[in-house]
Length: 344
Image (cartoon, rainbow, N blue to C red; front, side):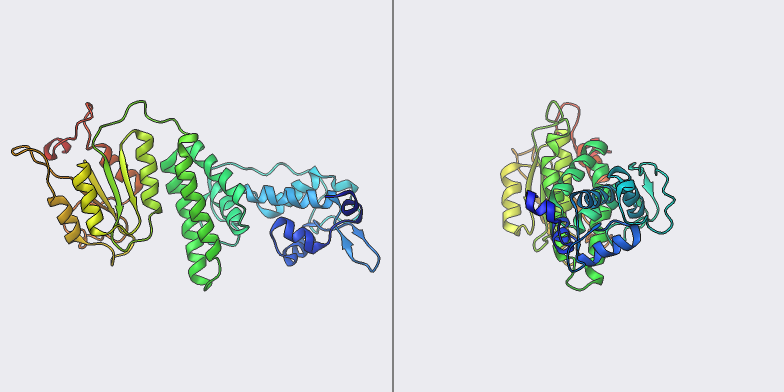
């Protein structure tokens, strides 16, 4: 803030814009937690001093990190001189120094999560949800990369990213057109974190094999994020991939398979309407190589769109972990692709 602005103080509206919350939320925090402006200008308008702003910013930071709002507010008031404020402590406050809020990554039941229906999830999910609702891109980037570095890609995806995405999706469905921007921003940041994973994770020293795994969404399927997670984990393990992404046309998929001679083809379908057992069989029937030694790809339907009937007898995977285990098992210790008998 400039010297003149600092001397005059900020209005509640200005602080709200700075934090990315509504003025009503700030007034609610003032009533509940005593985090409000201490100065009054002429005309009885209340102004936020630099200390007031720093206190509420600290409260937001702690809440985004996963601390319950009331606990975050008490710690923020302690750190920024609660005793020097002229306003009274909020109701129920003893005035004694609180302990720092636990920011552990273990699972807890309940707890706030930016108004999203999270349920019984890891602590990181609540912090991630708050950052998403506030559209706080830097905080999302930091928290997602921290989760990947702390837990690895598979656990970060299954226990941090997916529960938060599902909560945003449920909120979106129950709120009409609201929260669309939250879902889009969170999805984009998760996609970005998956691509940046090599920056925080060690990669395999040597490739597992030379024959790649082709990853493709079924024709018309736009939900490619789970496939991006699989691509990131396989890359970390040294399994070569060819990622085709969303809504791959049939001819483009077949051309890629013929040109690359993959060890496997993963067909992702989020919905039953996108899953196609005839397409899976057609891909599996493709063959290449010299006469007498021709072979085709292992086809793995993936995603909730493939039910038992729709998969047409092909093996299915129920999780990222299971898909990785299946695909990595295609390669022998020498990097060669195992035949059906060798896979067991």
